[in-house]
Length: 95
Image (cartoon, rainbow, N blue to C red; front, side, top):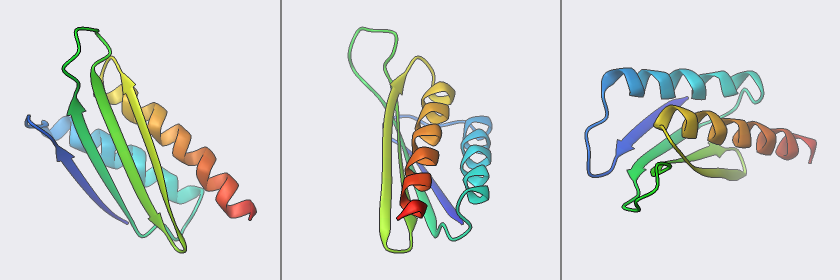
């Protein structure tokens, strides 16, 4: 699976990118034909603490799955988005 990480208006460090790639690669245990994944990391301009947004788009044969989560840290947002995608993969495979 190809994984592309884009950080919008900031530079993501290597540790964060590795964390994201590791989490996404675990999704292949639920669906072995995932083609690619795109991750967009953004900072929301609001004053609240939960201003980090992770948007993940997965391409699987016949469908594109998408999850967007806003949390306190990028790691937490990635975790919850990957969990949402895992549930979507399960529903997609049932069909």
